[in-house]
Length: 126
Image (cartoon, rainbow, N blue to C red; front, side, top):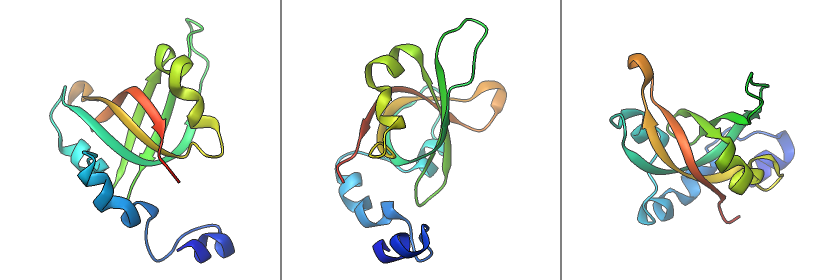
């Protein structure tokens, strides 16, 4: 997989998280598919690759960051508010911050697909 990423810029034979899933599970991380199946209000710790982080302007001027977390099982929408962003969120916008651990609460607004309200974020060891 390393050669695929180096040569092609993408992986075609698997996902990076497959290589470390056993270790992540032993450390208490769940998959994005498990988060999507979790009930409203569940507290979870999940790992994945951050995709498309963006900070759109808000009426209040406060920082809100939206991104998608990807692992080998699914995609999960995540939201990080200003307090978390200012204390921990810079890892999301660094070259080494794409493989992340997140802790947060599952939200389902209006019966919609689950998303994660991020309370803590950290880079996973490379």
